[in-house]
Length: 167
Image (cartoon, rainbow, N blue to C red; front, top):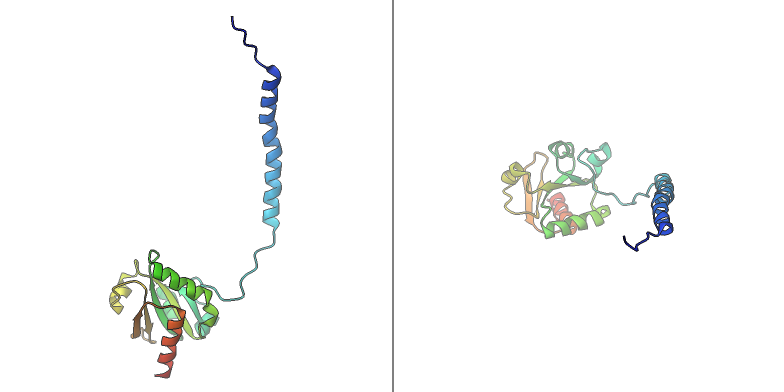
């Protein structure tokens, strides 16, 4: 026979703490969840942000930065349309995307920039002769390329659309 005697008081405390811990934590978690759900919604930024493909009536007149879809592109026919062939894996594209978003308030009214997926929009790449990402194409009302340039940011978009306005 062994001399080992289990410490029943310690074993009881251990079992009790295993039962008590969920009883203490669960109400705390419920309180935290309730506080989070009742918190005031985050304030929106004053500057415009990238929008979803659906074009609003205001955007048709004012322009903006939208994800390319054929429907959104067609809906923006009354604005100067710029296709930005963007790849998620391209560091230069990411920098241009960040610059456009950060400085979107500087985008002139009537200019719509379409973030166009370089990897998915094969027909558009073929149509406009795009051979690498981070390429921009300014198109006319019929969708014909007016100007194409490689690289750049919002400043270049503004400069190229302004030149097209004066020609």
